[in-house]
Image (cartoon, rainbow, N blue to C red; front, side):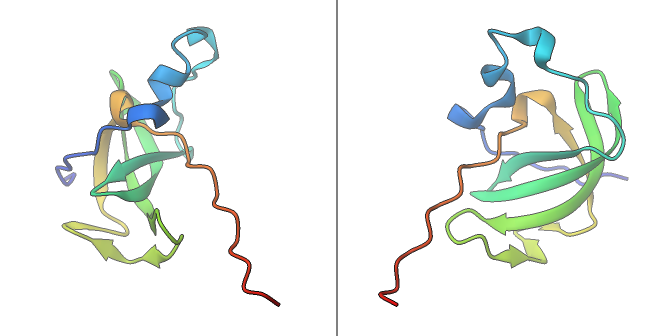
Length: 105
């Protein structure tokens, strides 16, 4: 059984928006693909097991703090290994990595 998740709106990182002008380049997720989404401000990576009618079904493979890249085992009601449904409309591009801070050394 999958866990119901209220995904964050991907906003400017929307995969569908990114490929709107070139829909032929947007491919259907396949088993084993890793997709990204946002949940309560956290980057969630989902390993696809199946794709049905615009929704990927898969396992939460990573939970990553967007501000510092810290990996987490759980966040809110979501945990590593949970099975979730990720609609294509909620898929997000990975954020640009932040430049490392200069610590003066």
